[in-house]
Image (cartoon, rainbow, N blue to C red):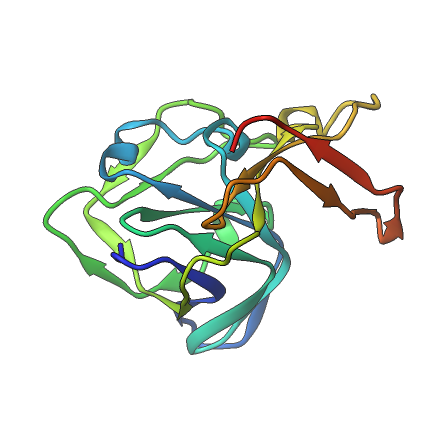
Length: 203
């Protein structure tokens, strides 16, 4: 939590492993939340407006294991940071150990499920918070800027179905000035798509 907004571009977990290894199929989401957000169960990241900032392979080694976000994340002033990490590498038999620190209150929840995202199936809470390191760049609010808040469809719950769904997203004004329009340039599987112009009469 910070009283000044900033941009987070990197994250690292502190790993305790005797030999280097790789965790494939990892996904990281971030969300700006209030203090009491951990009272909820582990849920679909898009349901709470979490932003996917990275996916890929986590290269494990003794010490800090860094990733650089594919999508930098803006944390507004006076908000807490919620990290949702989705591990799709395999079963619990190939889990590695990570260093952690004990806290005076619950700061971590986790859940497991086979062959599916663990939707509200009874989260486990912990006072042990995995050690992490963030690259945080304090910044004043830009005059005109927007951020991707969430990908609303398709959801992770649709990932095992052979159906086509429209891509819908929620964007948020993170600048200091009121916006009445913005132009969105985007790609699908690395291919540029027609730009989309959003017009709104609200900030």
